Amino acid sequence: MAEKEKKQVPLRLSAELYNSIAAWAEDDFRSINGQIEYLLTQCVRQRKKNGKYVPEPLEEPLELDIP
Image (cartoon, rainbow, N blue to C red; front, top):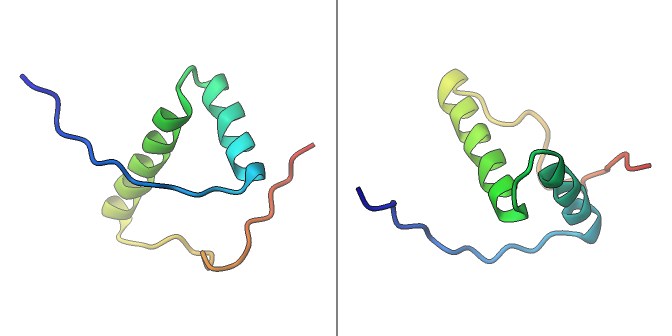
């Protein structure tokens, strides 16, 4: 069975967000791209499961608590 075709999507992230995702990906033994795909997949599954959108406004700047 052939792997499903994947679409390429240009993505711009702040350095702070990128570094957080990179650290998380390393903890989970994934590439950064793999981690982003995993996170998006989980969000879509959750949306399909309960029919609700992410509760926080996405237009607001993301504040990360990074030590």
